[in-house]
Length: 393
Image: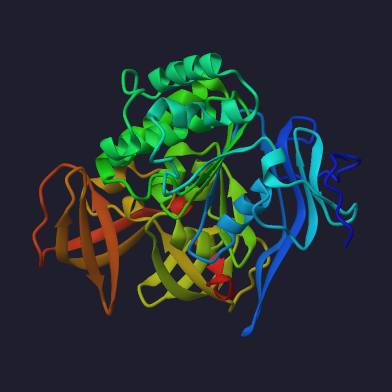
């Protein structure tokens, strides 16, 4: 393919219901495919992926190692060249297999925060933050002034003269963030930036990151394998597996209405019970080793006799004897015995044995239920989701 390094015409980009409309999108990815060819065979890292990122939107890519999330980030950054598809940033085509365009990363005007901070050890904090401005032709005095203002935003005012080796890991990541946002309100790419930090620092930086986005208005594409981080930060989450989106939507939709058994298992904790469809109406009846369970079909197409998985979140399984009175709609009831409890501070998780199977139920407050005590597990049919068995990954 003959590549052009000159800016291309964005041209007509097909409309896909993957987020913001093309007119509002900061970044548009269409039908992107990337295959790594090795001696052991081909590995499809991206399989016909499409995505829009709106102005000021925070999109998180979530999934296990090897699912394609980092490859997608690197393709947008220009650090990887896809095999086919198109990427448009602010109306400019930066990659198009059809038009023979590949704009190198330094000309895409994108900012990236790495897991490893990637700071110059021989530069001061201010010089590190000012570097992208100096590299784009901004005068030294103006660049250092803007760097100082940005360091104030990330809570590092007064540390301009320090060197990276004199800072903690959390402070170094703040410097990396300041360097990324100092240029303005463009797209920021985050490659697991908080994974090297301890839990308390991560929690604090998540809040600070959202506050910074509110103030500055940058768009963000954020890669992580941490589901808590994804739920806390995202306007939309893209759950990936085998180079494709399993589901793309707001955090509450991903958590409460997972599109597949894989998404339900990956995002949050889920009880899964195998069974077969016994009856179909507005609510599906599934025959299981626990007895009949009623729930909602996650997708159309189920038939009586189909093998399925019944999925219930632990927080939707109630074992308090008075809890059933507060559950709206139809209620499933299973008899069981508490096998063990795990005190987690805000909640207590109970392992409840019912016959040869166990369920995890979580509760907050109230009496601590001892092991060996018989309990009735109650959960709403409306909170119970039914997936075709072949959807299990």
